[in-house]
Image (cartoon, rainbow, N blue to C red; front, side, top):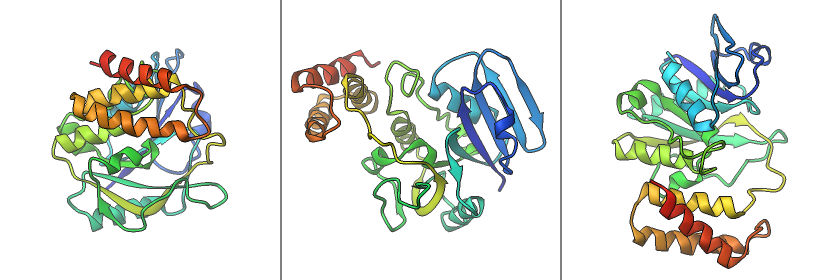
Length: 251
């Protein structure tokens, strides 16, 4: 199996990505029309905006068997390629795997399970994009892509990875979690800002995935619990308005 790192960036300069020492496809959203194709390195520019659009361009243009979803601000753990190959040997029926992130000072990026498991509809909500490794032929065969209405630069600012994994499950793909550190990323100092856009995106996410009022009710209960966290910037009434606006404006 050959592995390619699929990096999304807005940096128009290909040079910082050339010395990673790993097969890399960089999708850069800029207006320069820069294109570089070298041994084990490809840099493609597209004059558009939206993280999900960038992810989809990476999936579309990759010729590898395995793709690691990546951003331009992460590092890679020693032996990460071997960890990926070993995991696919361990789970030969896996179409998608998720791994762990470690911080530069050696701490887990979040609370992780210590055991392997097959993902469920609920467990995928805790997955970050850069934890995802995909078997590209299976994802392409099933027509799975990132919903371009979600993610940074889109109408709804988050939730694209959850929708991607949920759509994969709907298509019959098998997704497993492997408790191995794959990439390095610092902790967000302030955590997620729980503002109007956050709750609006979550309302839209519920509609996109379930399209029924039962799940809307359950989602509202869960999201209202988030208001107990210190990083909220929104009142209860504004939170409810945001959730319902997102839910009913999502198609």
